[in-house]
Amino acid sequence: MTHFFCCQLSVIGSAPLGCHSHSSCGWAGGAVLSGGLLASGAPSGSITVLKAAGSQFSWEHLDTIPPLTPRYAHSSHVIGGKLLLVGGVWTQARGGPGLTLVDLMTGHVCEFQIDCSSLERPLMLHGHSSVLLPDQKRLLLLGGGGTCFSFGTHLNAQPVLLELPWDL
Image (cartoon, rainbow, N blue to C red; front, side):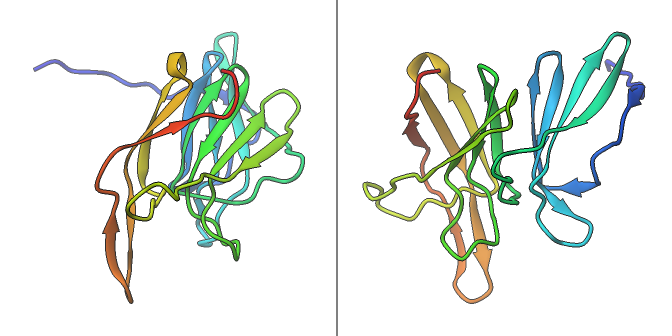
């Protein structure tokens, strides 16, 4: 049996609040953490960057313009200095989130809705996985779904290929 060893990292700065169902992805030798459910049960709208700083790391909070709509159970990718948030759950009156693009340098946020009218069944983008296919300017969406005590369980039955509306 092979053993893998881990060690605790030295990190400076204010750590993000503890949460679950957030999303994280690698960027510039560190990581970007977004959203999640806080201990209070409220969704988070924060983006925190774990940056490599010599032999240690540092936490940096990214302020967004406009403020990021709080969400959880989404997936994320970094594309050329921009964070792509895919789906998730939020508490807005209108449907679930589509795609959100956040410039990691300026904090500027752009929201995009996903047109699912060609699909046979509703697409539920929480608890899913997504794979970025940058050479094709596409996003492969796998799994996902949810349970409602009144309506039962719905699972996305097939993978969905999403054309991205911008150059990567």
